Image 1: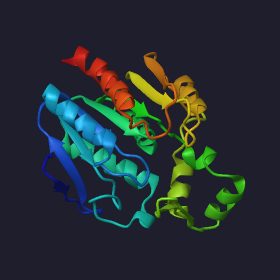
Image 2: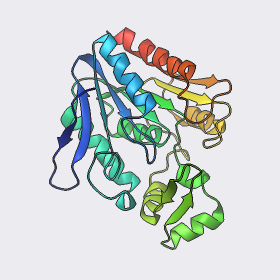
Image 3: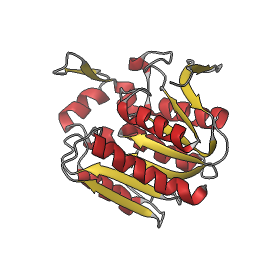
Length: 246
């Protein structure tokens, strides 16, 4: 496993990351909501980078995993800022950004802000604008009133949405108009995803300005896309983006 490091900054919590030295392009993994850099897909991508001799970086947003901060204080804008400073301070050259679920939303903002650095995007069950379509009108009213939502999960954990995060997400939506991204984009989605409707992938495809956008549907795939054959599909997609640049 790559060495755990921390990015110090004056205006926010320390960010934990695991860098892997190698050739360009760098693979930058963005976890999903309430996830971290040590999940199945992130580790598989790191092993792929090691085999290919590629540079890779995975990290935890503030308030998650090994990074400092409180999860309840996090906002989408703050996590986009985390990803931006990690890109600026800890990577070099062209970067392929691989975003899982909410990480796919953050990847879009990263590409908009740093078009000269982001050479391609891979969205794994990408969930742009989930603060809009992922909550009922009744729940959105409670969030707008300042309430923090907490739902117990079968595994004993809880799904928590703070009002500040939801409000920030609503201000960062992208699906209502053209998305000014011109790099190649690959969207991988399972047709049995119960968390992010497959329609979101096709809506995103239509909104992206890039002419090089592909949607890859995995039959029987759920939201996690962590089964061996699903991981293999992700790695093949990344490999096809790496090879022209190598």
